[in-house]
Length: 242
Image (cartoon, rainbow, N blue to C red; front, side, top):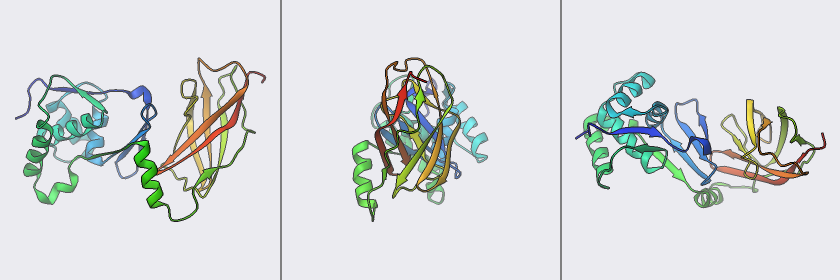
């Protein structure tokens, strides 16, 4: 049974980098927990619609418009519980723990086994799980980032600045996500975003915000490409001497 008063909305957007992929799926990187969430097309439609507070009925309608396919309230509710379990959305009211799995079973009965692959699915990997997966998946030299402090960032001007990231044994692609682990509070990717030249070379446009340090130092860059995560620690220079 669909709760009449259930409402759902996105949470924690300020800590997340969202990358929409060509197949309609979405990758969400949580800079606070270092967790990567891989969201399939159906769940991604629900996640996008939850940018505004929605009832289950409203969510089903919004998902149907995004997917251009029929979406039942059972499917919408199953997506809600997948996203809620990953900590990507919050719901009004409280529900017993078994409700999530019961909703998923109800949805699968409704869509039938032939459409089971369209069921909403969210896969989440913690940083430890990402490292374990990478250890198994990599069948060659470990990827890394070359030291390079030539791309200075001035902390007394907003920019934008272009940072060049040269990888070693990396697999940079259009889905690569660039973050700044120790500078996320003041350094952010600018509108031009990330430009990938090759599997081992990319450029990222950045801007400086409030809270930038006033003394000279260095910051780190992390590049996430699928399950591959490489970090250049303290390789890029910031300074107020511009």
